[in-house]
Image (cartoon, rainbow, N blue to C red; front, side, top):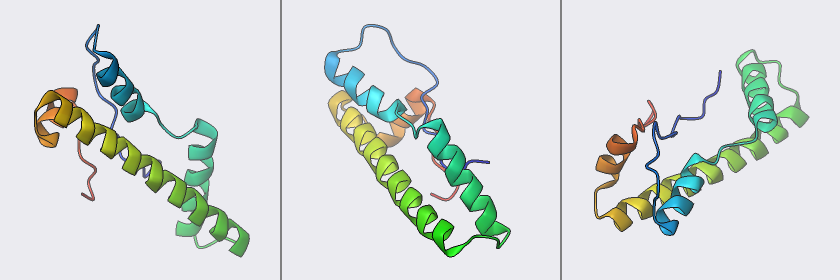
Length: 103
């Protein structure tokens, strides 16, 4: 199970201006599947209390990478909202993006 929030838009409008297309590409960019899979494995091991010190360091690095990627995605969403002249909440509603449960 992935702890990463789902920020995937449910639809894309055809023929978007270049700036909007680039921002949507950033929003849609996810962690590579193999890296996400490893992160999920390490999280499961941490929850099972079987994480080694080396794995703990790896987990910390991957979590930091994931948080930076999520921050970049949210920044792209905010820029897109500003470009469209709408609130971030309105943009997320329009794109079908749900805020993570922990927000």
